[in-house]
Image 1 (cartoon, one colour):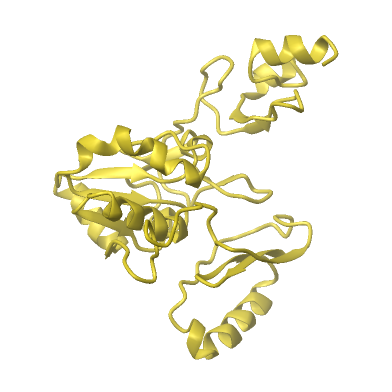
Image 2 (cartoon, one colour; image 1 turned 180 degrees about the vertical axis):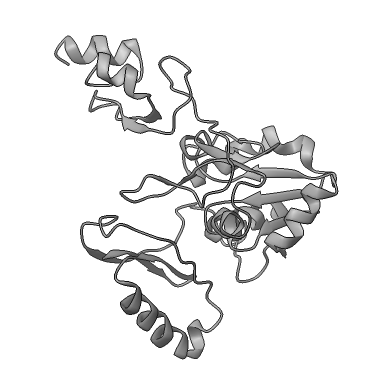
Length: 259
């Protein structure tokens, strides 16, 4: 089972199955010289991450809607920084800024220490966030995302807008957490499957907070008002009091009023 996106610019896929079957797939996949340098990541699943196998052809792997002139990673993208190099940066207190290119609802349950959330609801929101990032133009900037896919385009966009010293984390947050569990990345990693969040062990801190009472949590729900449906963190205590889990009083009032 899993989700596969195919576009002219590349492939992004998450697949789940028995270990021997997924490993056989990887071996056969990498035999094709066109795919020989594709980054393969592995993590444990419970067999329930996806309801079926879904393969889609799209215009873009990541829906940025950037023009090719603004960001074409096949022509120009930021150099890749290895997870070992990033660990060294943290250990030596290098002067750099991590810009998290994920959506804000992903950021709240886990992120690199000292990182910046540009406030993205979607990847296509980056042009509107550039003004917020302008003060970083003279800084060493490292873009990060879940597996490194988004950063190919997001870092290219920053370069196009005049940011000169830009890097992207090779393999993304997933690779860093796998190599250094509990180090520098605080909280859990958001996933777009039934697991919702995951971690790789280690002595880690819970940084997510309940939107309703601000207590520590890593539990996501969707707002019960269908027209809102916002994805947010809510602790079990708050949801047990309000079984429907509204993200705001306005949503509760409107929905219960019959709209």
